[in-house]
Amino acid sequence: MAAKKKSQTKKTQTNKSDSTEKHFHSLHGILLPKGQHPEIRRLKREAEEPSLHGNKVWRSSAVLMDYLLDNPIKKRARVMEIGCGWGGLSCFMAKHFDARVTALDADGALAPYVEFVKSANQVKRVEFMTKRFEKITKKDLEGVHTLIGSEICFWDEMTKPLFNLIKRARAAGVKNILIADPGRTPFLSLFDLCEDKFGCDLIEHRISQPWKTSKFILQVDGK
Image (cartoon, rainbow, N blue to C red; front, side):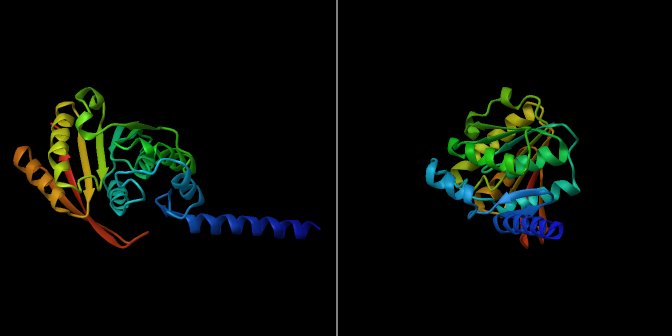
């Protein structure tokens, strides 16, 4: 009887592991839901559909996570993620660096997705906020140590608002700004503007898991 009970427990654990592998990408201890996850599918059916491409886990986020493990920020810093999407990168910052994170996106429909990713990763120090780039004030940025984003400069009209946001961030005392992208033209235009105004680095970073991919990271230091 005892042996049978032990076998049933083992089977349950295996099924849970299989389910996690089926529905999540696992990266550096963070679970990133796949689009076919039942909860993601439920949210897409029942909640408002995200309208600004915040509808999946972007590979640039995974690249930025890997880069930050090699180039860590200080512990317990304040972090702001702009264009947070589902909030996977924000959860990574909270979990690995004990950061207090504001996960910010222009699309308020993403709030339940961020809450789900927080729950899946047992993260509490992430707060979602709805706000567009041009509405982020110097006051919002005061006390923020690191400003991060991934795949947030995909339209030409986003380049100038992001450049102005970076200028406000530096004026507010933000020490580190990191934006990851595949290398789209608007993003490269943002790099040119930053390089001309205050200097910056464009870093190519490669990963092999959970995808084999290479992205670019715009790195701007504070004043």
